[in-house]
Image (cartoon, rainbow, N blue to C red; front, side):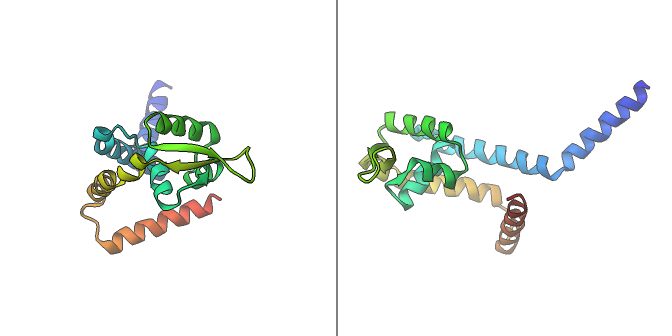
Length: 152
């Protein structure tokens, strides 16, 4: 009986190493850690990075829009924005049409930090993708997007 349980546990552990979800999860964790190390000298976290990135593209979007495009829930977005606001990188402003809506704007410092952070984030991504051709990178993105679409 104990041998049987042991063998089942071994099979589960072996399969875990090759399980697609485990591989994606492990890769995601390593990429986040790599990005966190790169951004740390600027006191920006890997959680704050996607919000800053979107605000550089479209400054003045709502907190709800940020939540939707970054796939983070409202409490998480609020917590991240609170930290960015304390850091002086963003400011909140009530929407003139609907004062219940907070629009998020970058401060001057939030705009200026882009020049320092973007190359660091790109280097972190390049490190993760080293050894993959552009065709392989495109293929990987397409496959992951197809999997994501299947889960919608």
